[in-house]
Amino acid sequence: MTIVAVLKLSADYLQKHGSDSARLDAEVLLAHALGLRRLDLYLKFDHSMAEAELAAYRAVVGRRAKGEPVAYLVGHKEFMGLDFEVTPNVLVPNPDTEVLVQRAVAISREAERPLRVADIGTGSGCIGIAIAHYASNTEVWASDVSPEALEVASRNVARHHLGARVHLERGDLMQPLSGEFDLVCANLPYVAAASNLPAEVTAQPGRALFAEQGGAALVSRLLDEAPARLRPGGRVLAELAPTIVASASESATRNFASHRLHRDLGGHERVLEAWS
Image (tube, rainbow, N blue to C red; front, side):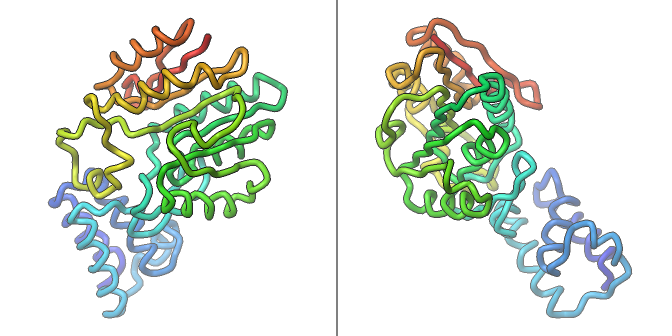
């Protein structure tokens, strides 16, 4: 079978099994299986695939059809124009989180002085690494409770040659980090335990998804604890689900002089920015 025929069949199959990006999924997985760039597929549409190639591709398409994220199948994911290693020990970087990073980078560039940044619940390290990459005046301290996640983050720090400016620590929220910070960023678990989620979301580590109090527990605790760890003029940027915006806003009102909400690409209130 030719590449173009295999792609059509695979995209149809994935669409029937619930993928809302079936053609893209099929192309990314085939490029990975063949060791090509996705662009190269278009140059080889008439190439006939060997049986061994088809077998390998069928295997990953089957796993995708059962809900396994594409990023886990290929081992990496682009975020903020950077490539990150991804394993089942970390959340898959989400485009909605780019709103938080873009705001953090804007704050950092406006400061025109060195800034200390905390990345709480770093996972793959994508937030802290992207901030350090795009804002050269920042030094980042990133924390996570998961040693497996920190191993992934460590490899991503090395991949982007940021070992001198991105430091990893294991522990709960800001507890393992010393000193005060100009900016505290966090993408913490914010999903209620009873939520009905797509298979590709539930395939990701539950400890990075779910929180008590309807999803608000960890974000609220960070907003309670962060003011004591901020330098004068410091800010917190916390990613939210729409379901906990009200609760997080109450916590921000209690602990900070002011706050605002930033919307993601879909128009949802996604990032809370709070300052004193």
